[in-house]
Image (tube, rainbow, N blue to C red; front, side, top):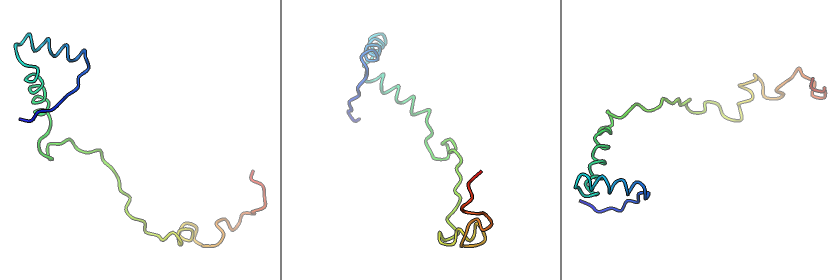
Length: 90
């Protein structure tokens, strides 16, 4: 066995000591039993673990950043060739 130090809030420690007195057991035994119960409920092997939240990986970048405008708009000079740049936006 290994020795560890655990900090409990005062109200929790008082309750734990009261239960230990009622059951005529050391506090350490109650804590070990509680940890054993917790660990029994947890999966042991990776196959028993709950499924991970599904994620989507879109893959790598297929177009070079320098060619992106041309690919998106079909040309590489003016993104809006028919629009007047000096006209106010409506």
